[in-house]
Image 1 (cartoon, protein in one colour):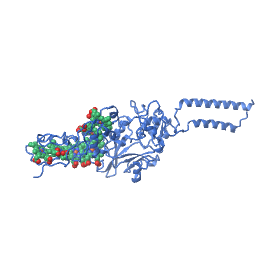
Image 2 (cartoon, helix red, strand yellow; image 1 turned 90 degrees about the vertical axis):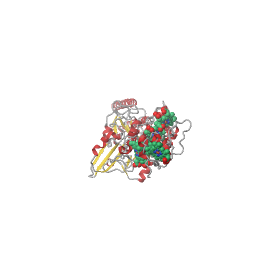
Image 3 (cartoon, helix red, strand yellow; image 1 turned 135 degrees about the horizontal axis):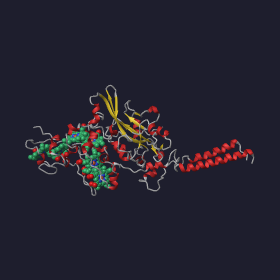
Length: 272
Length: 221
């Protein structure tokens, strides 16, 4: 046998190519892999994730700070009840005549902002402007959290939602550090995610289980003033497309190049 | 075998063994659906997608609560979903689990207490000045909060539905009091819901004597 160096390398490369093939993407349509139990709704089978690309809009000029979105999110997604661990929250911005900016989010906004002790510190200030800003995961087009995960436990779906594979997640918190929007948290001991895991990263999924079945996310459903809008960029009739057509929108921290898919109406430059 | 092919065979064998071992380990460690759609476990998408819902859609409440639904649907509260005030409804619909009747005052004020951060065009009240200690629901129906608004046309409960108290009175806003008030402080002597000398409509259910004058003024002589 007289194998040249070139042939040898070729052979090796072919073998490695074969290995690489094993991990190549195959079918794209969402496959029903939980065969043991019937899915809750038949609509899920007909769902084609290539036909959707979701986006979200927040109209800060409408938000009344009732915090019902935070409450609904926690109930829908079994998020721990305490304000520190939360998938969404409402911030209050108070801007004085001197353009001094105050930001707070007592109880993550879920009690509303009505208790007297929540308003004490603003007494006597000359307030020029004040408004509420609901925050949630921006489901970035260029998500830093996905990049840093060492075990490929977080990823973007074809329809544009960043999910966490909590079975693979090792709870190292890199993604929590990497997110410039503070949208992730570590599920504390004693609490479990809807998938049944503890001490793993968790985040807003835009209620993926609802939207694939044609329901809006729980926070959108709960908003009494239409400040939260959910939509599909692939549908020209979608309310989000309508907003992008008619309003001036802004995204949070655009300079980071993360390309957020949550668009804000009526933001003040002080909002970060 | 010549001297310079033997070491190639050995290296080749080593490579083959290495690849086989790698494949075996990979088979064990890498989950079945990894890489199906991208660099992640494909099955996980389905795991998220098939989680059960907790909140229903408000239209589903219409099936069994048509009278309340109709009232709510033509009120300013149409923007506030039933489950926003009563909590998630899937368990109630599917298993008959009880929903909460919320403590109204706290509930209302989360949205309606006057705050400097709220948009000015949203209806807000200073609760203490507006209502004192009186329950909001004494004057406002949660399902049709505007006072003196037009009640919806059809509110008769149909067979199989829970009968629910509805607002069916006439609609001239705040009729003036045509008679003197001396000696008539206890309005309920003569005005009771569907009873008394001059009966009151169902909209007055739960309204007590101490709040009548908040809405009714005496006609100027």
